[in-house]
Length: 321
Ligand SMILES: [Zn+2]
Image (tube, rainbow, N blue to C red; front, side, top):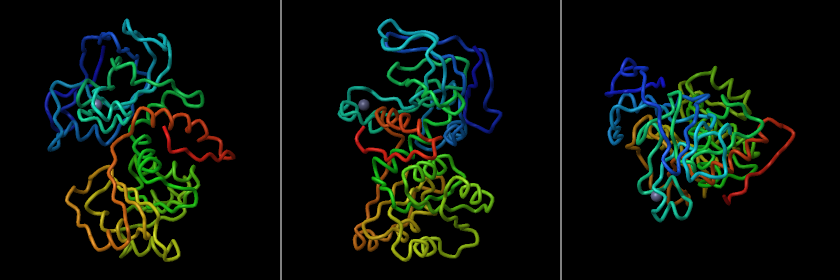
């Protein structure tokens, strides 16, 4: 089969498309014919290399995919060859205290496709059977492949971690990013009001088309937190969604209302952020971290996504998974 692999970290030409042996499933695994695979910023970090991101070489890259089951391991049940499925991209041990509780992305040995094992930019990929979920009827393979990393991450941040409620206001930074766009769409679907930021008026306009209530261009706005606060009538935002890190963290804390929650899932602008602890304790703020989501949250999100293209239907996501 053909696959995109890296043999060392480097620029784009570190990626080569080569013939690789076809994968074979072990007892509890399935082989997928990959129909669609989506790009994430993570793919660039894997290729370039980042501190703390250990990748065994050579490695087939790629994290997201949807495909058709081509082969089942002998102890797999509940699915058949020919089923169209979307991949849960997290890897977990199955036996640590968090896996036992169903909190898969907290697994003490948590990993991700394309990093800790061969990924999805290939004609075939082998994965644990517990990592595939049927593609909802309303989604085609292209759409399904684009969902897992970005939308599951945003889902967990908004609903499991921050417990976003209808009528809440959510501040979302860097609206061009995948998690940010997912957070915008999910917030709007849940009946929340979204304030988004970007350096691009074009991206802000597009976010408006997707349902953002307000856009702030941080290149031309002197004080993003003050602007966001003003847009809530002086109250402050209920939730801040942050995948940026050092550049936006101080504004998150300043923009939150008393009792508000900031959730971070990434540090594209740096991991060492300034925190005003007075704001934290005096305003009873919650500062939370989040990575991907569990297999239960993934299934819950996919069920919920069935309603995404029915604008007349409003459905509030329950918190239990
Ligand atoms: Zn585990």
